[in-house]
Image (tube, rainbow, N blue to C red):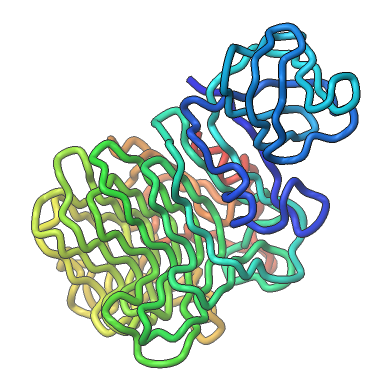
Length: 399
């Protein structure tokens, strides 16, 4: 196991305010970097400062210091519990209150966001591992709630292509809003996965991805796209305005399944979900595709159950030519209304062997009984108000 090192991304007052700035500052080998707890900073220790353990004599580079933790890339020796770790002895230092441990990096996006984060994110140059992964998630304050939020929720909006590039093996992204405003003809992408590792674990969960640039989408203008061998889970996402909402373009192996569960893909110029692997290692379940030129194009996936299409392309014949009955299609609100054909026809994936989950990306509903198809579970209303459902935050239920 590794110890979680938590940094905050806030519009103001956090550890960082731009996601790419954070990535650049902390880029490191998470399996050899260490995190220690402390009781408070005396003076200041800026990012990339050389630090020394007053008792152990250990040395290293302090990548970042939060109010309660310090993350260090060691260069010699082993830092100890209870010692002063200093940039300048007795002037700029922390006193450690734990032994060093390897790092699991958690980026907590908090506070309200009145403006966009406009710098594209590239996650590259790290060493990650199954216990030393990178996790990015918004709190309930900074998270979208079913539809695109331009006033309070965090949103990454950029013309740079792709908006997010993942070139590392162990990365988890939850609940982000990602918009690419670049020309669709220039292969605008939302999230591109470009890592070639059979033991990887990449998760894109509960995000809204949209393309709003000009022009006819090119072949590679995709909301979520993988071009390499990896184990990828894409679940509970909403993807619209691309060439393909979700596109798996590289064949899997027996250990690198490419998984699409409970996604909603709408208004894409080519496919809602496209799988071109040509082998039997993709799992496509509970997805709702509607109003795409072609809702599904799937080449020999390993498993498909209860996918619904507005045309005749669902792999399940009984779920073809169905009405999604979105709450406000014209307003890009792709929650389902009480008349939707997607209600109570899905597969319960809470005990799935590849990825276990039971809640939707709004963070206020738990799937139970017979699941609905798509990114959102229908919530009945009383007196025009949704019945509240108590639950933990979206990311916390993912472990």
